Length: 272
Image 1: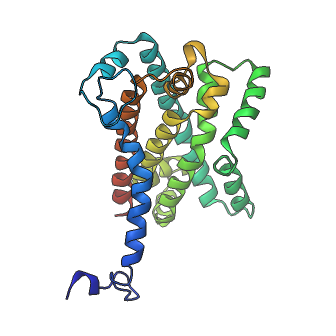
Image 2: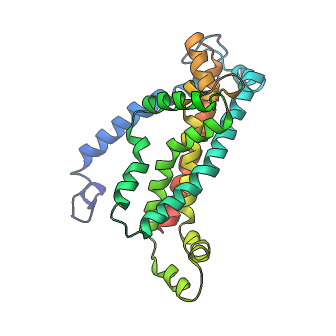
Image 3: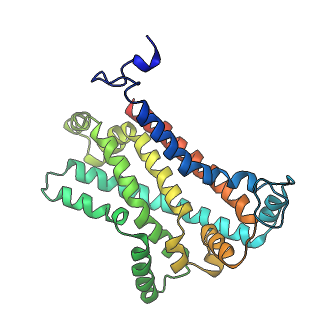
């Protein structure tokens, strides 16, 4: 029996019948991924301008990036903002997911949709609203303001991932612990949380990626010493074509890809 004649699902659809779907998926993936991957060889060019393919290979622009105080400051701001976002968004999302999961309130579904609204609203609208609110609260160009805004954007992803982990968890285990005298908090920390830990870690990694890659909100509320790396890249690309951007983009691609791969690994571990 050839590979094409083998069933691809429980309803006996063969791989041969789905061959057209596989071809379309590969073409779409190539269309989305190849433009991104082109940046990688461009980052190793010695040219003064963005060039593909490079005529001369060099680490010139990586040296320029790591040797620049401005770029390093912006990178450190992004890293700190992403880490603080993880520390805020992950516990809040975990508590919200748990509360909604064990709640018998009829409005729980509505509250869940309300909490993931930032995923459905255009980011530019969120950025404008945050900018005007921060102007009154004097949070523009501050780390707390940046973390709070990024938390709003990262919270829906964390909430969805943790909620999915809770749906595959047998709540009777926690009920048994509580029947033996454990408080709800102790039962959650000792019984439930270890069971869904991979979902929590996956949510934290996604929160890091959302914060680290965010640019639109950062354009409105950060600047000066609080400028993120993505904001600095956008402004540099707008004002001048600096090949350093290609080297930074390559590093961001590697960081984001590593985080997403770890998310998949933890997700499979949790479902297993």
